[in-house]
Amino acid sequence: IKMPEDSGKEFTMVTCSAPVNIAVIKYWGKRDEELILPINSSLSVTLHQDQLKTTTTVACSRSFQEDRIWLNGKEEDITQPRLQSCLREIRCLARKRRSDGEADVDTAGLSHKVHICSVNNFPTAAGLASSAAGYACLVYTLSRVMGVEGELSVVSRQGSGSACRSMYGGFVQWIMGQQGDGKDSLSQQVEPETHWPELRVLVLVVSAERKPVGSTSGMQTSVETSILLKHRADSVVPARMKEMIEAVHKRDFTAFAELTMKDSNQFHATCLDTYPPIFYLNDVSRRVINLVHRYNRHYRETKVAYTFDAGPNAVIYTLQQNVEEFVQVVKHFFPPETNGGQFLKGLPVAPTTLSEELKQAIGMEPMVKGICYIISTKAGPGPRVVEDPSEHLLGSDGLPKESA
Ligand code: DP6
Image (cartoon, rainbow, N blue to C red; front, top):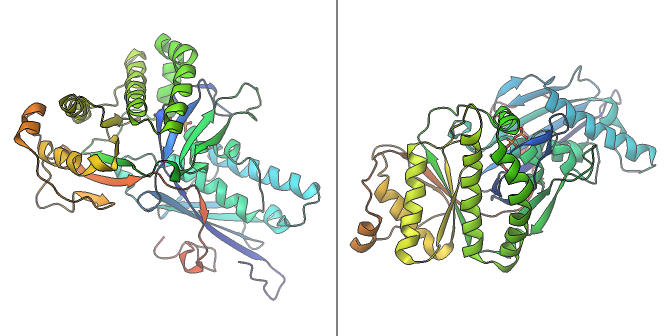
């Protein structure tokens, strides 16, 4: 919206939302820290924004004295290098478009300072990757405010590597690229979210201590010390990317699931091969891994897959027809706290009964309160503009509204 004021001041405000993504071929390791260029390509599934998303409002006004940012209700330091990279790159693209004579470039947005306000619709404390959705949303919203189009994934990549994959819906690859300037290190949609409607995602939020080592510093130590990581990047991932893209194209769940689990396991193996070693999986994570393998073995079929990022939470991929039973299995082997909030959030999952045979085949001792709750979701679309002005997180004074 543009609100020309008496003084001729211009006030522009845009709100957008962007999704979380979960990699099935992992990004771990940079060849350039500054530009955030990876040592291998990666591939992820964009999760549905109904369950997990970041919403960001950017306002632009001549009256603003400086760029400012509020994250989940708290003002943060705008001078952080990664935020500065994104702001600089978007302004650079806008300036280029203006000098190319594009009519719809908002020149006001170029000379004016911005106020940014961003919130997640999921608890940050859950330890879910929020930087990907956050930077994707920031870059997408800034691009809309400044009237910039074109390759935005190279910009969000400079906020957080995995953020470049949140610029599209469905199944997305981040092509590592070869160039020193990073212009060819970008993301591409492999298939849209409508391609595989039966695919379902369960986020098992593990009752966790805080994550010990952040991904940025973790992968830095891995690049410096792990020869397994080098082998992985040079020789394993290139072939796996091809196989994974093929599995997605063909909707071959068995191939998709096995590659997903093997790649998660290899990523965590490179963490153990890092010196000093990094541990992201905990006891609950390892039990989930066992549970999945015993479940699959019982059916002599790969019905369920797990993957883990830089923390203990498990993300489960399965097909719609297995969701009810598998959720019941999780409930049985990780009995929830009876008094706590609801155990299952997101897409509804009907309760079912488990056969004694299945419980015995799994044969694990139930672990009370190992898992806090489950978020049930599926693949979803990429970033979008939120049209309803009542959804703006900033008020007409350019400051966060009460609720933001
Ligand atoms: C394990 O994108 O958070 O989730 O580029 O330093 O911001 P930076 O790291 P980040 O790393 C994500 C690592 C991962 C795997 C993945 O998402 O591919």
